[in-house]
Image 1 (cartoon, rainbow, N blue to C red):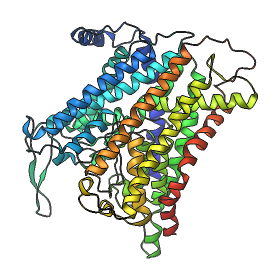
Image 2 (cartoon, rainbow, N blue to C red; image 1 turned 60 degrees about the vertical axis):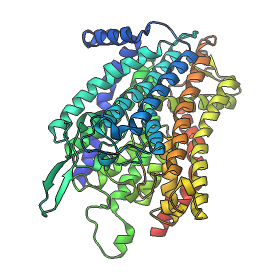
Image 3 (cartoon, rainbow, N blue to C red; image 1 turned 180 degrees about the vertical axis):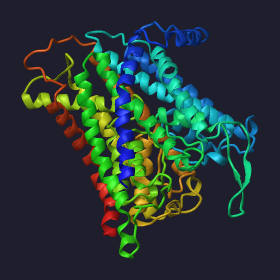
Image 4 (cartoon, one colour; image 1 turned 120 degrees about the vertical axis):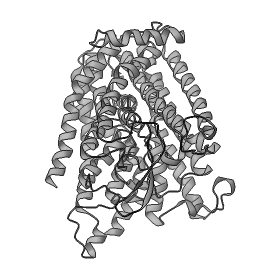
Length: 573
């Protein structure tokens, strides 16, 4: 067990160390400074802009950024929807997988466009290789959109007074070509040489040691899995995701995939410091996020190591910890660490089944997505945290009796209203969806078209855990995460359509809000720092931001957690 814990700590520390130089590189990319890779990427980017007819030097205000962002995402959605809807009749389908139903295609297309990858299908039988490749493309571009949005926020915070915040397409293409693509090539190569398939062959028939004849799916998995983690997407090539022996063959690949999830969200925080030339400010942000992360991960790892108290009461030894739903090649410690890393960072990939997690672990996984402000996904983690910074600055200003200022700009009613709306939207979407599903399940409602049977049929578990399954599904959707308590029967019109709506609203409104705030602040008159200015690069401000996150985000969900995983915990006791 000490060896397992050493592995967890080592991966975490190495990720932090490597994130600092990567953050410096990312800042240089967005600033337009010279980098070592310019001779490679400059011609590629010029070619892309030439054939697309886009002027990458044209400056945009925040409204133009949003128009470009939303337009291109709408195009990707319709393309993906039609490919999934007709994949059974299209090429690159050697296993003859059928086309998706309209509701499943709707859910899957939205899910991959918004960087959530909530999968209500199994990769082996649910999609063709053509669909897998287009979904892989979406994993690149959805991550690139999030990173480009963060770059716009960086620019708004850097400039004194302006409405020109760079060019969305320039930030977007650079995010994909100069950051995501090189890292994905490295990770995919490691995975391919470690045993992950990278081909276009159909299923392979093998005979197991028990003499069973089974068919094993193959395909271009290594490339898909690399960007799945680097882009904090989480979509599994196979149904079991990173618990599958071909997606994640060894402890080494497990470490590489964990590092891949952590590295860009970490680096984006340090990139902010280098971009603004305020490294201390980025250290404060990273410190707040890390404290929040550790408060979630430590109880989870301890809970999984100690095992199930119900099994202990039966007199059965659990020397290896709680192993239900875990892979023996990984163990409970790093599986617990992964479960929090993937929910905090909005990746959503799994190397164990979260539905089998101990109640404390389930509560921490849910809370990580409910807070949705510690590290976060590629780029959008900064956007979520930016909202809490605005609220913390406003509340701090009220406490000292002066107009709140952030980086030389006055925060007034309009910005606070937008920030408050975004902060409230997250719990509203989660709790509204859960309440609706719980009402139908509690009344065993006949769902008609929406579900083939009565509503209790979608629950694999009754009572507290069944409630947690429904709560987790909407929480995962609203947090753009994609993991699930997979006891829930979710591939039906009710869950496909309702979670699809939550996915859509919870992705784009929280991007629109921070960009609007940043654009409004950037256009205001710059106020030089004075003796009364609130310092945002101090530990006191960090504590204030943490308190705002705890009060607004975490406490909003305490009643729901009490009905689900916490109640389940006390029943086991």
